[in-house]
Length: 63
Image (tube, rainbow, N blue to C red; front, side, top):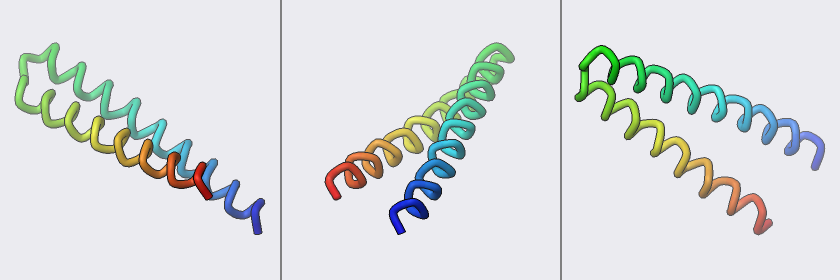
């Protein structure tokens, strides 16, 4: 059962990492294209994803 949980965690880690990188790239590209509102929204979303990931990993570590 623990292996299954580790597999799911690895999948989630890969997804979060990819999403984080994509949101960062899109935010930077929007900033370069003078779309400040879009850039800020993308950065805010990236921060929310990373905040949720941090909470998840802390709860997982405490189990």
